[in-house]
Length: 139
Image (cartoon, rainbow, N blue to C red; front, top):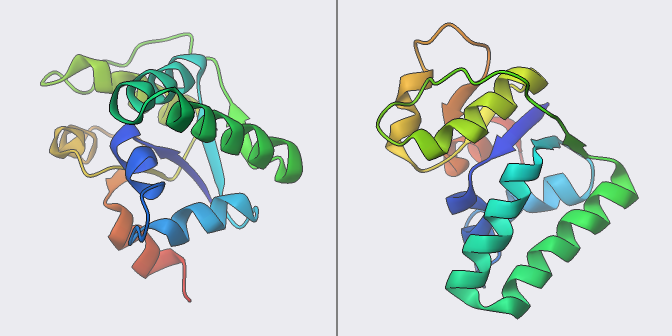
């Protein structure tokens, strides 16, 4: 299964005692795959640096690098088209574009702006991290 992970989910998963840590164990073990773009990686790093400082940003970048190298479970894609599915927060479109181009199954997010993707006619669908874990990652 291939997913795209919104920044809000990526950052919250690294918090101590995170209820969505299971998602990142599945990524780290190669149980599921994640698609990213250069713009998504830069956003992860930027927002992590703003919220948790340089050490937190470095930790996330190191984790992505290790997971990618060890399990080859991170796919870097390069969308050549902007689908403009989300009008309420255009910055979120980088995640939608990545998901569509990668043919991902889901965009894992807590952001309600992604509801626009639900009936847009594309394969990837938004899903909350807790719902994804419950449905697809049995203990």
